[in-house]
Length: 265
Image 1 (cartoon, rainbow, N blue to C red):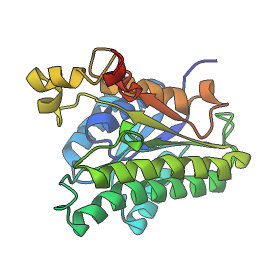
Image 2 (image 1 turned 30 degrees about the vertical axis):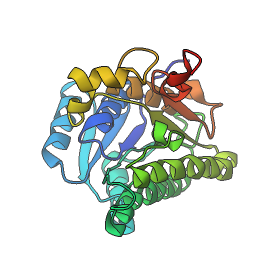
Image 3 (image 1 turned 180 degrees about the vertical axis):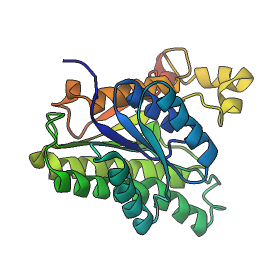
């Protein structure tokens, strides 16, 4: 048994940049066809599709707003029509709207919760419905797999980011509750909690002097790459993790280990 996903179809939300792009690449390299969802980044999404196809894979780019129920329903319908089925869902879309609690607007609170938490629920719900509708495709021991993208901030408080931290904390118990509810129907639901991951968008926080300060929070001594998250996603999507249900895989170089206490506090 290995981590191959040949014949299976994966839908990755927020796949036009950062972690989403890395996960989509990883799933494609493992043999899955990939539905590359994007919100506004059409060009990078289409470039990723061309890259996957250039390596002999199958992919399609589809726009959707994950915070909108009708848009999510259309995404899954169009994706299943284009690829014939959906076997794996990676609910990855997420945004930040940061401000001190005293200055955070209700609009920015709602926008983050709507995208990061409600959006992940809507994608999980649509995925579950699709898995049950299409039945057992005999390509995996599970009827379907859902992977929620959380964050170390589901457990680490983050001052100035209360909406983001609340959304990620919500994902943790939402995922476990869905996993409990659906496990009996052979739908495996898990999550990944990334720590500091270097992407083009956050380069100013992961390089130079800022990067050196960041390393003080990472016992393992390096900032993560999107490939670190992709590797975890491929494993969770494969039958190698078939007995893993309702679990969050933390990929953070030890950030959650309270590094300030390494020298007795």
